[in-house]
Amino acid sequence: MNEKIKVYDEKMSKTYEHLVADFMTIRAGRANPHVLDKLAVDYYGVMTPLQQVGNITVPEARIIQIAPWEKSLIKAIEKAILASDIGITPSNDGSVIRLVFPELTEERRKDIVKDVRKKGEDAKVAVRNIRRDGNDALKKLAKTEISEDEIKSMEDELQKLTDKYVKNIGDLVEEKSKEVLTV
Image (cartoon, rainbow, N blue to C red; front, side):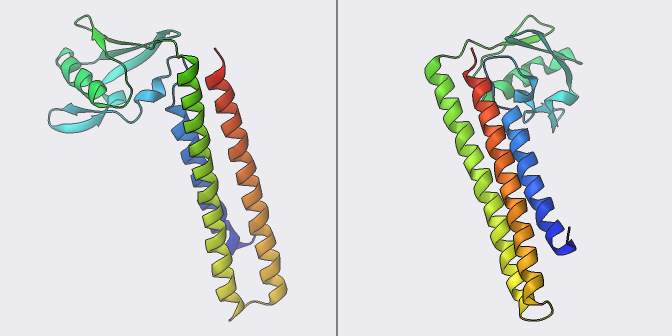
């Protein structure tokens, strides 16, 4: 792969990886500890990721259990969960916090699939914008140092990369949609 094209490959790869990480936080009827990845807790005045202040487990298919390392953190963890967009009210027994995920209704599943498809489309647009930036940069090079044939070859390579990432994103969206719609 040409060095000038490699930069755009890395950018497209980052877009894809971001989408993968984003999809991990979407709940699909089962308890997924990744829905808590973006949560931070006030730990002695410092906003600290939830994973660093307690142990997160999934004892049953629809329950996430958080066992804080310090009992004094229970209120702060509950506050962070309530302030988040998870939409689940935590319950605690004084030592652990439990999040019980209700069964998703068919309507809610369809809404989640719409959201998944929108995020997938946004990622495809981002990949295409990276391609456009790459093509613009190649056109500037054409005026100075590289022959038309080399530019054409690099544009083709950039298009193949774009096609690959758009297909991968499409596959990922279909996989996640199927997962969400599965009861």
